[in-house]
Length: 226
Image (cartoon, rainbow, N blue to C red; front, side, top):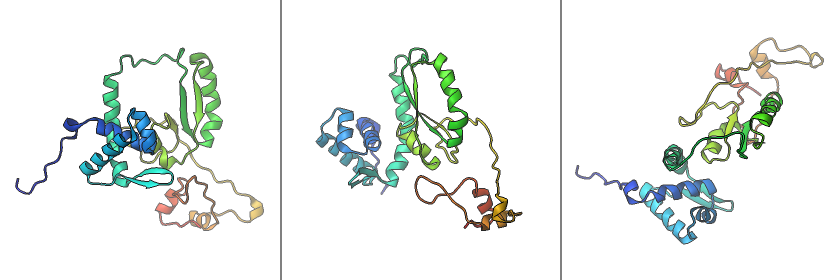
């Protein structure tokens, strides 16, 4: 068709470009990405230039903290990760898991409630079934669970995750209900949702103001929290 732009076949050109892109996003630093790829930093900079040309986006912004991916880069990486994992699995000779002999460290995202009620039982079960493994709990915002899994920074999340990526395997473990306890010394307890929402609210989050799961059903009905 006249005027149609010819799009390059990136797989035919160099699959390594996609691997380099994943390393840059994961490491957030060109030097560390070069070490991970066993390449020199000039080579990684050249690959980044090729990626920017192909996707018509700067992909990363340089800051004092390293390379920060653009929105376009994050969208591309979310689509790329499951395909890279699938390709890696093709070359794995033995993908079996032996809990008795493994010494792997599992990084978990868990809420305070999960830590109290489930972690002790998990540790007791691991003592006999997998004595060599260790668990590390990672305190992060539930809204960022998908991002951290994409970066391979956590292995499992037992938490509220409202919108997981389609490639992440999920399974409902339990349902919880919230209960409001009220101190009579503070006056008459609020008898309606509107009166409850009119009272001062405290929101504890890891990164600035975000929707609170407990209050979301109330705000969706038009109630406004103070």
